[in-house]
Length: 266
Image (cartoon, rainbow, N blue to C red; front, side, top):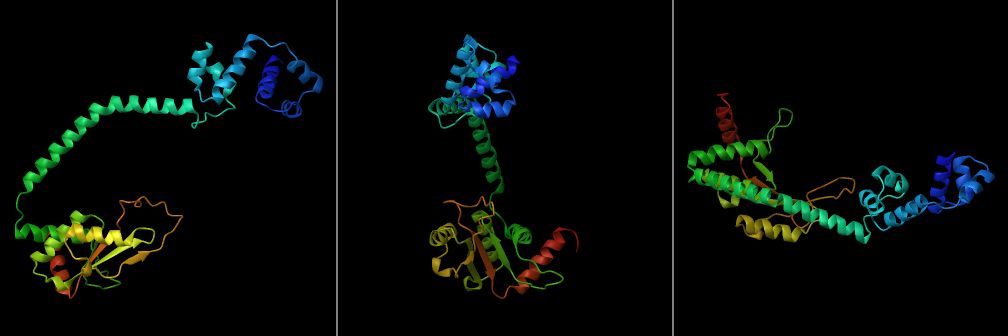
């Protein structure tokens, strides 16, 4: 019965009314009164102190060290009190832990960043000047990955390229210039969610590509769906750019032939 007595006193120290304690433990009022009236022992004082420290944001490990008890004992005493991360001590511990983690990983991150810089610089140096043939093959490949394609059930041999990466857009525009397209054949349109800054997005795309904002058609606005867990939001979100080509059927056939040849189907 001593375990039930300990539990009764723990509940009392947690602020649970005696009537509710009696109902929870399923004991008589006389037994409960006897347990709660017992003369406090040193263990009771330690338990009360553990509860006090927990409410102040102390971890189980710190409570055990402070009171000189086993971690399992400290955990038993405060298991009814989740750690409040908003307390001053909990925030200080979290900040200290982050500092220690950052210090441990600082050299690793510096080495990783240096290696990243080395590899990307070597790759950039390898590219050199692109030949016309390389641009044509590269442009056809990225279009076949990201562009609109005709389907057996819906024939539409149009050149429409949509992407959110300025690098890929620049490569595709380089491809269009290489095949001899005139400026008035290339159209631009932003596809973007209604919650974004549409005007800023247009200015950003115009600056990135060196294209006047007057060249952009009215944007396509996507309606916001709160149930969608979108990650592409905030200040860094500028939507996708849609590049389409007027009278592009022959160019579409040209791309189709290049892809078929590279895939060994012709």
